[in-house]
Length: 314
Image (cartoon, rainbow, N blue to C red; front, side, top):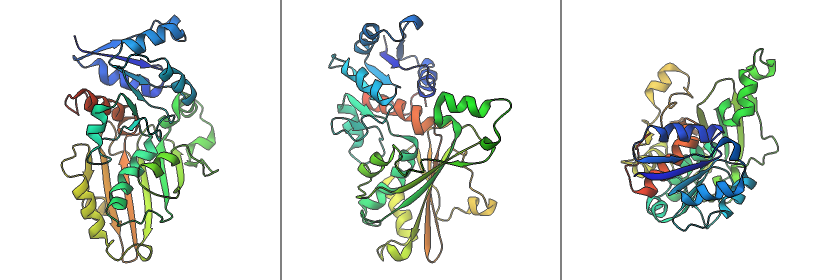
């Protein structure tokens, strides 16, 4: 018998993709709820408590309600909502966050899966803040462009409708109130003391995400040269199978002249870049917003917790 896994909210984009990852594995027994019982609290509670690992792919309030149904101390919850990402009782599900993070994931029965924009941003900033190359109090801005699948079923239907609304054919900046739901975790897990100004942009393609963070060298410590930032990334992510640090001023990207936002699609990989001139530095990272930005990250965290090969099924 393999590990018993239940996905609460398996009809959504993240839940469906987790099912796809796990259905191919021989070490996993997927617990399934009858369609007519999907909203039956007693049946959901039974399956949640029968699972070795239960994924919560639900809105925030529903995730909190589902978590309260779990009384089995052996059930590990992995929540895909924003409900618990800064909760001290939950471990942030980003194994590459810090050297001790995998051990925390192995020990914990409560894991909060990171957001897509946040994962890309945190992997860029946490090593630099830790190394003292980016001051924790430095005001930062970030632009994140993403495919429309990150908006869930309703947005996917809008973009795939025929005919398509003309406004959907061009990139659309959003979260213009400057209160995006990923900001708290972006601060909490980088060490920044002020929320970055995040401008997310959704565009007319299915998936793929890239975050860019501009830096003025005059605002950085003298030691924060492009070479020093590059070295900090290379040290932190040495040996990480899912994080690839590209060469400083990546020649292949510069030769083409354009950044390929979708180059990590259908993988669990994150690519890290440092571009620089005499006065400015541009940090960039890209990932598949449905892979390392959502379902792939959740399965990776499960693998770490269970003590199996971290890339199993990915």
